[in-house]
Structures are given as C-alpha cells and as structure tokens.
Length: 440
Image (cartoon, rainbow, N blue to C red):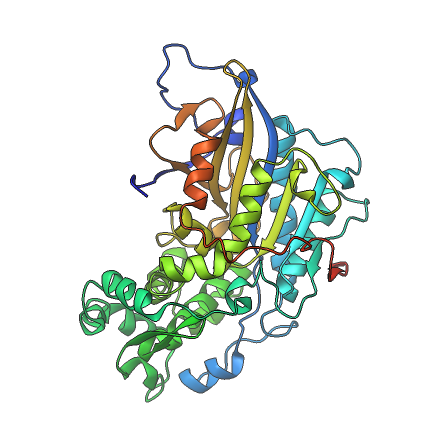
C-alpha cells in the first residue's frame, strides 16, 4: 500500500458516542448530524472467549510445574469465557440497534448469519453469543464440516506451501537483521518469563538458539519462541479467567500490568509469524474475500447469505492477526501489547449510508475487554465500555458516528494483499455444513 494506515485509540464515551465512537474535528465547516448516517450492516470477526490452556502436558514438562487444571479439557471455552462472550455480545447488539441497524424485533433469524470455525471453543463462543443476543429464539451458529475448513482454518487448509524465500526476507526485516541480535534485545523478556514460571533447571528451551523458518504452511520456531508464546498466553488467560492470584503464573503476578509485562515474547512470536505478509496472505485471503463480498452485497440468497444486516464470524486470534496484517490496520489498546488480540476481541466493520452525499462509508474498529474487565466480568456500560481502536487512513473523516472511510477505499485496502488463488469455494455456505450444538 502506498499509504500507511493509522489508527486512533480511545475509550468510547456516554450516549450515542458510546455506541459508535468519539467524534473529532472533521474536514467540513458544519459537522454532520448522527441522523445523516444510516447504519446498514455490521460484519464481525471475533476471537473465541477465554479458554483453557491448550497443552498442559507441554507446560508441565518444560517448566517443571503442574499448571492449574479446570473442569473443561485443554483448549475448550470455560464457563467464565462463555459468560463474558454472552454479556459482551448482548451489549454490542444493543449499541448497534440504538444506532439504527435494521434488524426486526423478536427473532430475526433470516437477517443474521452466524458462522464459526469448526474448533470447539469457537463453536461454543458462537452459541453463547447468539443465545445471549437473541434469547429464546433457538438460533444456532454453523460451521464447515469439510475435512479442512478453507476459510476459518485457512492456513492449515491451503494445499500450497509458503514461499520460503519471501518469508526469509520478511523475517529478516522484522528481526532488524539477525535473530541473534533480536535475542539480545529481548533478553529481559526471557528472564522475566523464566522467573515467573520455571523451576530451577527447567525451561531449557529458553537457553537454546533462536530459530524461525518457513516449513510447509507455517513458520516453525526454535529456542525461546517455541513455547514462550503459549506460556504467556496461558498466563493472560489465567488472569482473565479470574483465578486466584496465587494461581496466576504461580503467584508471580499481582495485577494486569504484571501480566502484560510477561507477554513480550508472545507479541514477538506473532510479529515473526502470522503478522508476516506472506503468512497472512496464505491463511487469511479466503476469509478476507468473504468480508469484502459481504460489505458490497445487497441481495441475499441461501447460497450467498453475506448481505444480511448482521454477519458474525467466530474464530481465532490467528484469523484477526492475518486480516489486520493484510489491511495494514494496527492498534494499541490501553493495558495490552501492540496489536494484541484478547479473548473475544472483535474486528468490526460497520457500513453506513451517508444520506446527504448518497455514498457508502465504513467504520472499521477493533474492540475488546480490558484484562480487568475480563477478570471481574463487571457489566459493560457507557461508563465502562469496551476498549476501541478505529482504522484511519487518508480520506477518512471524523464524524458523529466515529471515523468513517469511503467503502471503495476500504475495499481496495482489504484486497490489495489478497491472494486471488486462495478463495472460499462457491458452495462454502451450502455444502458440508454442520449446525453447532447448543452451548447450554
């Protein structure tokens, strides 16, 4: 892209501004009224809610500690996670309805598309969300039952390998030269993690040489990056789950700030993996194609439901990381590392019709709970809303409904890095589709 996309981070404030963003000084002498903009469609890609750690055996083996267990299996959505998703999505729907999203009262099933990754935690996140948004309606989410989902699990489904030469160049750029120099710059991150979770003589992987290389359809890591990201994410999940502090990083975390301080290697692993343009294109092009199609589709059919007023995809941080990389959209939510994707973090596209100028505009934002909002599960409100970052680039405008960008410009930036050979099959929503079981 010729221009670098920028973003604005802010707390949403009360009243209508809490619904759709903080207004700023626009380019026009008279600022437009909220009624000048009709919210026509909302498209969301959401990470699953708080889950259990994914590999208890590895964590115990590498650190010498038995990590706290749960009533759910490794990798599954917790009850706390489901509750947080439910309350968050109910609140978000209320904001969209107040903003004028054209959903019928009651049970507008034909106006909503709810689709998930086939992974259990994503399926259960979707079910918790729609149960809360439309109580008593019996709505369900759906997922692809193909052996390899080409959209929500795109990186694993793609038959072609990564271009190793491109990945090597991109890794060199991110590392600022050699991995050895990068390791030296992150020595403090390694030692903080060692002190927090490692028994004496354990965590030998932290002392191994750093390695990152494209192999097949993903980047493989050696040394500290091999397991450190998983450990840091588990600590974040423990805190977000509301575990007693003596169980979070074995009592070595006192507050949210301490959690964030342990996430440096996880952030770096993303920068050297899913945030690489070649990796993002490889895994995210099919989902990006569906999003761009949704934002410009008005006619709804059984085989093409993407024009519905509310389109929800429930997936993984991997999905959002790849999408934001392809778009060039970065954020810095208060209390989190740069470009972090917390549980139930949502990439939100709100399409508005600008009535006075008869044109389509889009507000793109990333929204998530803070660490303490997750830990406490206090109700979201105008006084305690989600954290929000808005996408902004040349040509976007500050309005009373947030930062709006011309639809054509948004689409061109979304498609600029897309691999046209890696798109969803035409029958994706009609063939090999399975209904998710209720989360209850």
